[in-house]
Image (cartoon, rainbow, N blue to C red; front, side):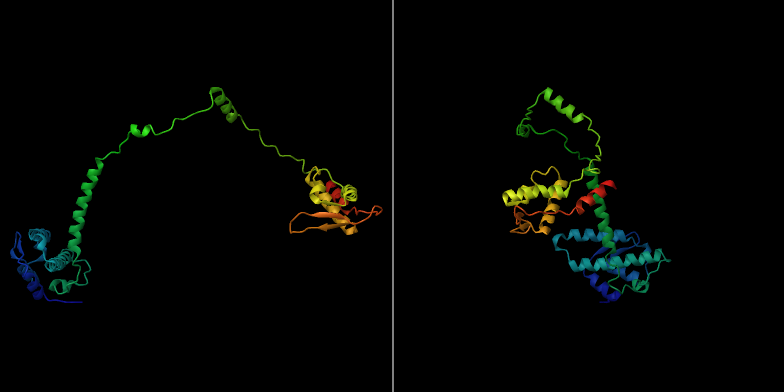
Length: 279
């Protein structure tokens, strides 16, 4: 951190030839700093806002030739004076660098506060003007321009009043309340033995059939399940064979018995179904 004494600040500021005109002081800015640093002038009696306004006017008077270093030095000293003045006006505040502020020796103590204050004040004024201007603005509430209105296609309705009435009646007609059917609870039992007899008769006549052909005339799912169980029983008895070329492909059933082969079908499925029905 670069630390400079009050005399060096005065020497740097003296090159700017910036004159200050206040109610209780009139003269060069460096002289004002000397008086404050030597406690010959109370900082609380200095109108820092007026000093800032005069410096801004001084910068604007120079046009585009203003000195960045001069402006930086002023912001440094003015913000330091502002913090010192605040510490004097609020003695109960906890100011850690009060000694440095009094001597104007720390060059990096809150030197941007004054500039921020002025900037926020100006921005607040700009926003106030913007809000006032925007309050006078109103959205344009008009219909579609005539040049665009002709671009819309005409609405063509292919139904008349009677059709509209029929559609409305259909839409407004109350829907029937759903009914819970209990038919599946007391579904009729299907005998596996009876389905096995049907399969044996067809396979003896055709020799080979697909399961799709064997079950295509089944009236319901239960019948198709019973025929599949019957096929398993016939396979266990060794009178049929299964062929399936691809996984999940078409299942082909071959009759491997002869015309005189007697087949006994176990009635365990029929007994189980009968017991379930009674329960």
